Image (cartoon, rainbow, N blue to C red; front, side, top):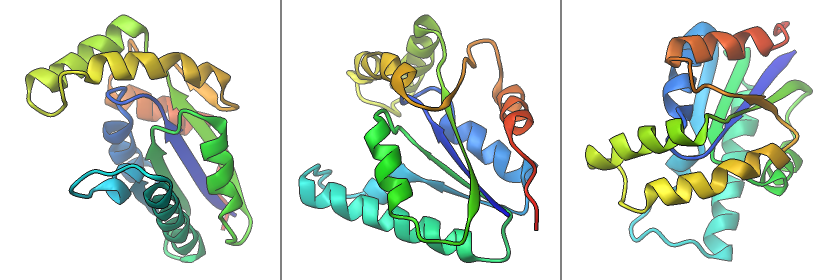
Length: 170
């Protein structure tokens, strides 16, 4: 059976780095980042663009889940509300799959330090620290496995996630 893994968490918590590592650990696998579907200029969040992005994500997830080349489909995105997860899952009509949702939830001071490093490097806007910290408590409300990666590096976080997964079966 295919495996679908959602990795969520506030910006700067390490989702992208961890999922890139998981891609190799869980091979044959494919990795999709929800942010890729939002790469637009100007960046415009409306009901129309939100619906478009979610349809595109569901389309891609369905295609990857149907493809025999992959045992695991890894998807990461902020997904700070349970309704986002449920809407995405409702849009999937692929064959049966084992689903796991893990939220990366570092301690606030660790998250602030990580995001500030991105701001200092010019990778994020000045308001990113405050926005990321405001999202952090929302993950406690999700029906996901919470993983505090404050004291873990990327490889250790990927190993911890891998240990939480049920084995994929052909």
